[in-house]
Length: 352
Image 1 (tube, rainbow, N blue to C red):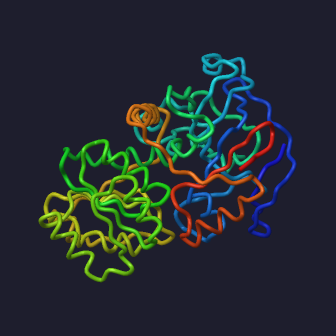
Image 2: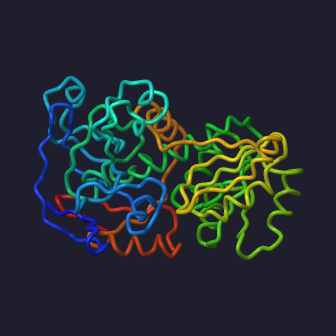
């Protein structure tokens, strides 16, 4: 089969022929239908000190996909599925899925210490077939199309919990920082939860996407020098939560100025290349709170996906061919992408 593989020796992608994998006892063999690009994939090409680790080399990238079951292992978890099921899944594998950390924190912190991430330490989903852990998979609910739903199984779960975990009431204000691949979904979730939304970005096309998704106000923080004052005026003193989906350290530095003092929350979702710097006095005196929202486990995946189906949350996705993945990465790096970018596979080959 064809696979887009990252090679650390030249820091480039290569379209390689690789064997189709065989499912182990607890695994499903999935014919990939839709694989989409996440900013975390692009971080492979950049230096970072945020814990992103490469495993095998070369490795098939991509950790966000949907597909159809075409084979199964003999284990109990795999036998809950049937050939022909349309499924989505998360990328954490080799963990126990049962310890307290797996169930309530994240599979990354599994007590076994053996967790690997497909697309980074093991082959991911920019290939025609993949094996996935049946315990981290689910059948798509009615209303979700296997050919377009891939972004929901990272971006969607992440954006949903990034908004829901703010624990806001309908009518409160939330700022979505970064209105692209994650943010355009976050805006849809926020509106479906009855929140008032301000979208912030540095790319005009992303702000257009934000308006299309229902944002009440949008600002280009690189062009409008008064955007902070305008946010404070609109919200009557600051937003109740600022949810940062970007990899920009500067955007995190800007957040405290627009958060409502004493009540507001900074929700950390995006992972900048450099560590965050927060004023300890702000935290100690309660100027604002800081909270994180991870990209999902098999335990919090289902509520996000079912909410998406119920409220018709749709990833806005531009489709490419598998051979065009380097172009997709360049577009993401240059902030020229709008919504999500993905690949659809059909009949063993990707198509537009």
